[in-house]
Length: 143
Image 1 (tube, rainbow, N blue to C red):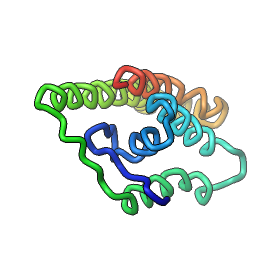
Image 2: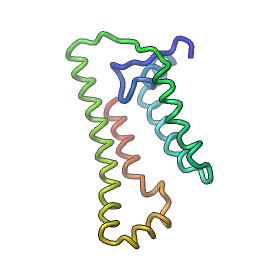
Image 3: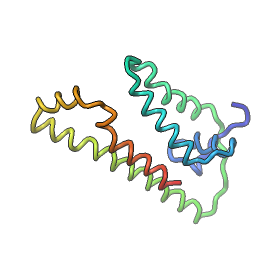
């Protein structure tokens, strides 16, 4: 990881992907979307268990701790724009997660036997689709 760094001013989480995108010349939005999709898809590989499903999160955490921070010395207006884009990302993410959890929790409270049937018969990827779509929209909106 020679000469790679984190851009905390451009961060949605820790700035790891923003720094890698700047260093490699890739689009931040595209890199974030692809990494998120890989994270989601790795978790749905049949028969892999927790070992492989936590690997993308572990890699990101290690990069977070290992990469040095590079500040960009943004103006006050630019910092306010960055804060606004982070809030947009978090709002979309929370909207997606809430959109997933509220119906499942409500069904569990009202019809617990149907909830178990739903959880065991519908592919998990389909159950998590609203959250996935909203998180990707949040990444796009945040830029």
